[in-house]
Image (cartoon, rainbow, N blue to C red; front, side, top):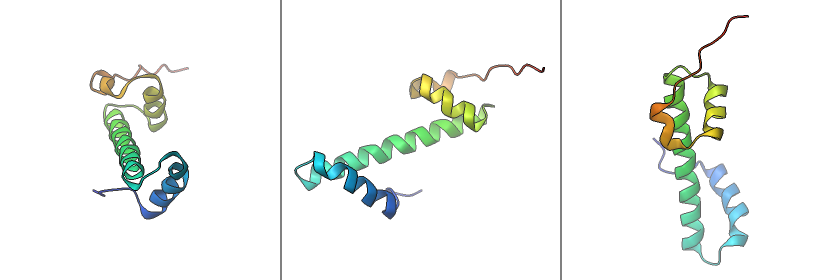
Length: 81
């Protein structure tokens, strides 16, 4: 597991977030928070896929529900035309 974002992503985030923060510590904390949220979301999508969601359905489900509800999520039954 990677301990932080890849170098390219890191410097893109630095460029995006630098105007919002006055000191390096706050900037670094914001980058760490963004990375943590991305990893949490990635793990949630993988968990939904294991439960039977398609990747697109898992992504869409996360847009509509909080991550805390992943444990109780169930995919809809597929209807055949």
